[in-house]
Image 1: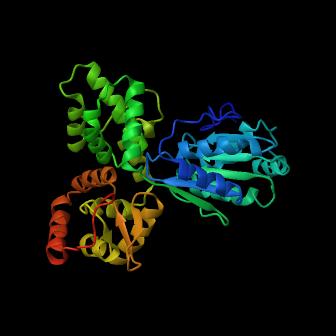
Image 2 (image 1 turned 135 degrees about the vertical axis):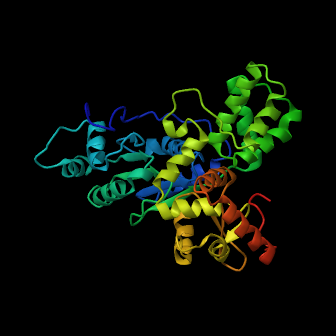
Image 3 (image 1 turned 60 degrees about the vertical axis):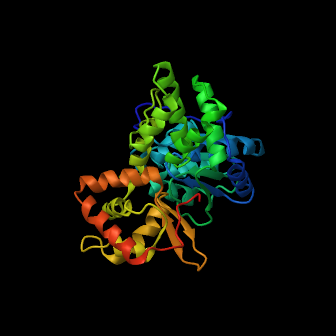
Length: 370
């Protein structure tokens, strides 16, 4: 729709561009299987985990089953949620009918279409996306929706497929593929260092892709021991830049994490910063002991842990006794630590964490991946 903010570049794509995936067969199969029996599937995961790649791969494989094909709408550039119906209508090339409004026109036009509607990057438009989907699905019986978001849309009937960090072997293979594509040279003896690089990046595909490209740049610049230099940069907390025209939130891994930070409430951001003192798994009571204060009461900490897990900031798992425990991945932990430092609270909460360790020294908690 010319002149509509946020709608530029949005169009249907009958032939979806499918990325090169490694280690995501289970997630793709889960999305396809869920699409086979559900009307709304949302792919969630950490920033940089590859939600879009998984969603598009599954959608491409399933597209032949939809008589009217698929329609992909990347929503990152859309900032005004009121324009969401207009954006979809423009992509469908529907006629203007300002007297009736866009939503009734959309519902009428989609009522008999057997279409897969793909809404990519919904997290900043959660309410608008949820309301639109909840309005369309009951009156459009052949319509199915595949969404990607850092948190669920919370629409009745929604099925959620979570994309977790890669297994280490898959992360190393993905790094090798991206490095070769970028022109970097790797030898078998580099495998252990590559694995260390991948661990520093939480085995997240976006970070791995950026780091592989950075390695190629270091080799072209004649850097001494370029792979070791890359690992040292990551261990020192430096970000890995991207030189192409990717959207802002994908130009660096830190930018992708910053996008998630912007979407959090002030209390969630504060809990994220304070929880960065934990280097491994921790439970609800642990977080309350270390992170709670007059500014962030214990009950707010307890609720915030669940909310940050829903927002794909914390990874949640279950202990043998049935209680939940949480992990703040290294890249998000480093981001939180920078925020804690800016708040002037790093020394206070590092000390509180050290006292907690001295008092409890929990034996059952180990970092993820061990």
